[in-house]
Amino acid sequence: MFSYKKNSYTALRYILLTVFLSMTWSVQSTLATEVLLAPSTGSYNIGQTFTIVVKVSPDTTSVTAVDILLKFDPELFSVVSLSKSRSVLSLWTTEPTFSNSIGRIAFAGKSSSPLTSDSNLLNITFKAISTGSGNVNVLTAPILDADKNDTDIYLVGNDGTYSIVSAISAITEVPSTPLVSSPSFSDSEVWYQKTRGIFTWTLPLGVDAVAVEIATSSNNEPDEHENSIYEPPVTKFNITRDIIQDGTSYLSIKYKNQIGWGTVLNKKIQIDTIPPEEFSVHVTDLNQKTGFPTLNFSAVDIISGIDYYDVIVANKDPVKITVNEAMLGYTLSELEDGTYAVMVVAHDKAGNTRESIISVPIVAGWVKPNVPEPRMSVSDFLSVFNMMFTLLLLVIVLQFIYMRYSWKQGRSREEKLFHETIEIQSQMEKIFTALRDEIYDQINIISKRKRPNKKEREAIDELNQALEVSETLIGKEINDVKSILK
Image (cartoon, rainbow, N blue to C red; front, side, top):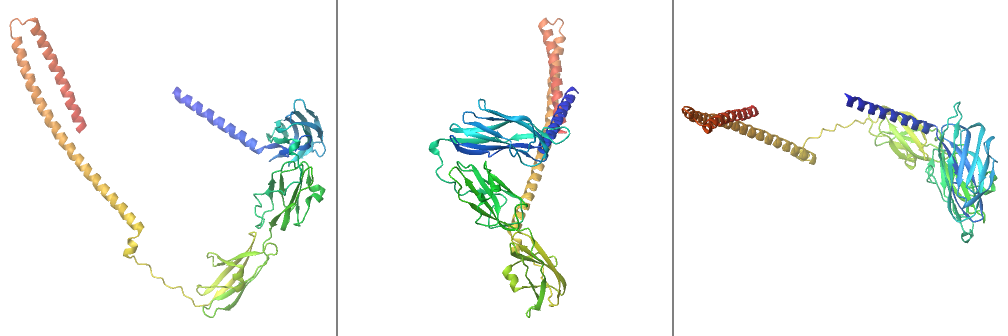
């Protein structure tokens, strides 16, 4: 009973612990806010200054207050200045301060309105003073949720890593053409329905600014527009419906280093969210040979163009028709007389669709041929599947016969053993009885003497005891054998 209660108590503890961890994980997953450094990586020359931006990135909640403590390597770079320009914090509960001797930056503040998206908190300008690679780490960052309880919703801080190179490695030419990638718009020649995605890239050595925007011209120069220049440089660009439109657009991006602006990349993005225009299906003259009508249809999609058509007759499987085939018309076939609903679905190159339905009377006199049921032949029976099935069935039957034979053989051996045991029992009883009678006769002879000596009396007692023990043991063994053979 004690062990049962102990095990139950232990199981209850595990259950409660699991529930607690699940609830904790759920809360953290729901109330998740990150502190970001932008850019998160970079490479700079000794003596060069560079700026990083401390950002807050709420996930599924809103932020009203932050308290940030950063650590940096004072042997690699030092703080030149802290700037509150473009910060979303309106009330500074702790003014931004830094220490180049211990490598610390601290600040805290509140926003006048809840923050629900990536927001700038503070600009930090560093100066590179020694070669090597060092981090700017987010040590602590209590972040308060915009609720009445001021819940701390800080999840994680994304540290930054920055390399400092010597003057020997100084930049001598403008940056190369950017290399960008996107899981959302991976192929420039493909049309997409979606209008949301992200482009990312890795900053080359010495890049201190990026100009990036969405353009409608393949010859666009993004650095000509001040709002498109990001300094410090960013490593990603989000595409939204607000900045892109249907048709062909371009992600226009170029890098800048201490020499100047590099070569522009205008990466094509093709968007089509509008279905093809409405169209009609027309029934033309009957085919003279078959008597079935021909359908003519032609849809228009001014953005991406028509890719193909699906023709669906009476809920049958769709028949795919190319644009060139549709120009020649589609002739119906193998339909018994009657009226059929025919649906033609036009697909544009982005996957948008438009349907057109028409009722088509059929008077071709076609009759579905009676196809005789296939007759089984020897070759059909001797198929691989049938042969395998027959072989398996034969193995099962043979196994059953062998098991039956083995059972009978075992039963016969048991019966013989039983009879032999009964016979052994009978013979042992006869032998033991004769031996016992002979021993009793000898005991009686010795006992009838007038004065038996001490040794004779001891022998008589030992013989009597031996007979009793032997009789008991032999009887027990015989009974055990009988119980086994029942």
